[in-house]
Image (cartoon, rainbow, N blue to C red; front, side, top):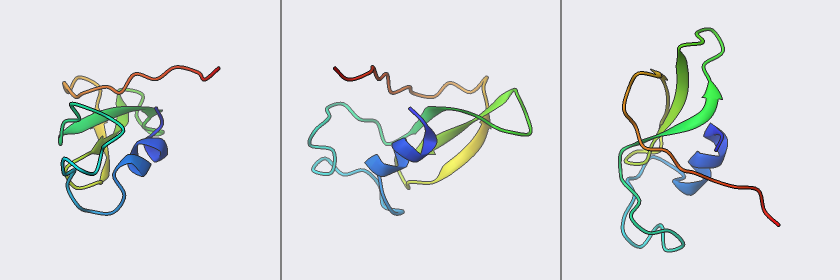
Length: 73
């Protein structure tokens, strides 16, 4: 999932509360990787912090969550 798609799940700068993600279960309030590589550094990618909604560049060696997706019908 791209960074801008992940931020739609947690708009603003508020943390994820249990009622916010009623379409999803077991959502962590920590970072999730996006599929976007950081443009100026191939060893980095964008992540979205579900606690505060911020998008940050991080090195790919960090152990963050992933949000698997598939194409629709």
